[in-house]
Length: 142
Image (cartoon, rainbow, N blue to C red; front, side):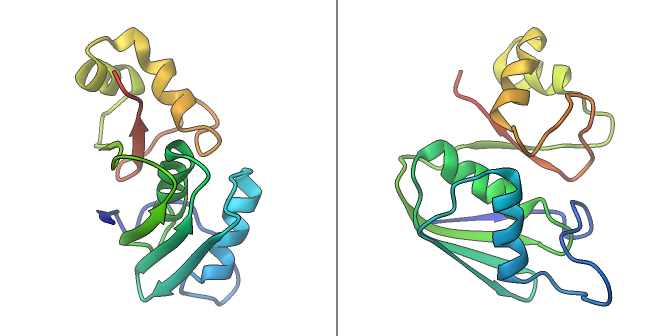
């Protein structure tokens, strides 16, 4: 079980109109739109905290689900209680001025390995240059 903090005012908007709070259904739709396998997962929203429980198909999918629901505007924390993977994963919060090259140099020891971070965060990332401050990224194992 883990708890991750996110920047509440940064991230993708998954609701429209007058709706002001993120819902579990909107997050399930977001996971489906991204092509992430969320079958068997239960998503509950309590204010700005999201709780994801159930059985993830893999450690990679577990980490991607955490990031996909956490990098949504209005979400400040994600608590997970998922089985189906070992470990807590390694994450990096993007700061102003960060690039994938710089993050790769800092976390993987070589800036040229930025594509590994990009691939580890697909489909949430669509282009290596499209990251923003407050976004949390998955860092692959060294």
